[in-house]
Length: 254
Length: 148
Image (cartoon, rainbow over all chains, first blue to last red; front, side):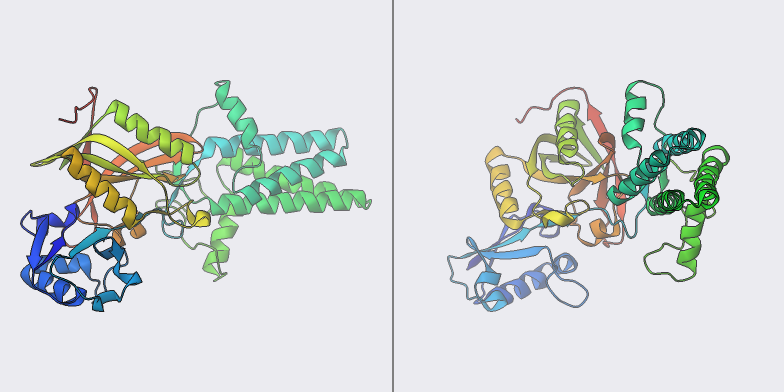
């Protein structure tokens, strides 16, 4: 008789038994005999197509049967056939919703507005380039460009987190477009096209202000509309209960 | 179903989740199973065996680690009552990937880590039809539970 060792999570389906004696010549016949004896085990061991589930592992003594002859591995009477789970999981960014700290986004917008207006006032092209660069690097890293400033404000107790269930990508997209506009503004200003350059910079300031004071993110709205036009890689639906571009309303745990 | 865990043990899990951020952390919960309630008496961090570049949103506890853990549980006179993992920058809600790969009976706790700060920890149990996770009441005890 071969002993089949049952892992803890499956013992509820074997009347609490941790090992079961079965007469079988191969791994396959042992497993068939096991699910015949305990039919409710089957759905947890095999998927809808009858294949062994991806995270179910069968070991004969200390050896994975995949390194032997698979299901056809022969069994001796004193062998132990062990069903061993491997455990996998994790979040799915493509399906799930993230926690986005809107307080960090607001500090980011305030920094963009203040520094870009400052650049206009003192006529500093380098500052326009710097703000645009920080935004683009932030997008590349998947966070608000001025996140370090936000962390400093938080440590000083000047701001509090405002965590909402939201998608990250639209905010990243909006920041990327803003950064690209400031890069364009820098190029135009360096080329002597002053009006075009400062117009681009003021568009960024206006849209950041609309987001900061009006709670409407034009870049996010554009992101969702591009998704609805069928652009690959863009989401179609904003977070539940909100329209494209509007601020998310649901909090984690609510 | 309730899962009892002491503050110090929950603290151990949270510290691991923080130090692994932005990658997912994982580990096993050893404890006792009584009718309707389980009690964690030891947590064991396990190395995330998923491919390095995927660890931001995936974890894997490989079978050899499970085999060793199962033997260790037997030695301690305990059982593996559950599995914990973190969701970096995401809520403590199970994903579809969590559900489709979940084992029955085990309680899965998920700890949310947001921008390097600890968020909620919530517990989940796969239903009998593998259709969904049901939330488990997480009871955080002040006192450390003895192993025996």
